[in-house]
Image (cartoon, rainbow, N blue to C red):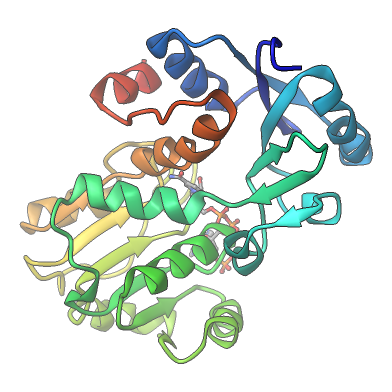
Length: 276
Ligand code: NAP
């Protein structure tokens, strides 16, 4: 087993759009490591059989994406605390004893991107205004609370989903009505868009942004386009901004390190490789 070239994959359906093969392939080439990372289209009905077979075929782990991020909980033998809190997994480790460990690295990727993109960012500086209440939002809230943000002002078009998150995460999360979000911006030390608004093919973000303060840090999970309307307005208002591409890159770091034995760097060369 130890002489085998390590294999890893991303499993999903559809899978052709996934950027993960390019990302891991870049690192494998850059560090001259033996190994391969491939996209595999897997239906929900085949997921368990495929995952049980993969370790025997030389796979050391996998990423999972839509529609398998929650379903893998039923198959994994061990689930990390952060994946449990987020309620979904994106990274699987196939252990030497044949057990499958499920982790979620989205929150890690989000915070590392902020730290790299806004050096000196102080989580304790004030409340964070988080827009959205979907799957990615759970990872963002988890990581912000862990980083020490004192309060999260959470606003979503469908208020009940934000209230559900408040129930799950407790008193440090406070729900703000979607129509009031322009007022909450004034109080925010950090603004995070976790909705799909502003993404190519989606409606524009239309919330009032004139309350943005110069010392507010603004970040967007959307990375197509790289500079969303939210980030452009924030930059023009004098705010520091961090785009969403880095989150995608950083979330891949823990998996690559576990599978291929080297902690990879997120740098300009990687960003360029992902953008060409
Ligand atoms: P999701 O679970 O489908 O949630 C979508 C969110 O967007 C919900 O809060 C939804 O509000 C909101 N939304 C959609 N259309 C809206 C509209 N017209 N007006 C107001 N709100 C609207 O999606 P997700 O998985 O959380 O992903 C959200 C975004 O983050 C996507 O663009 C995704 O590509 C991006 N993302 C980026 C990374 C990265 O690495 N950078 C990682 C994960 C996700 P309702 O609840 O009212 O429907």
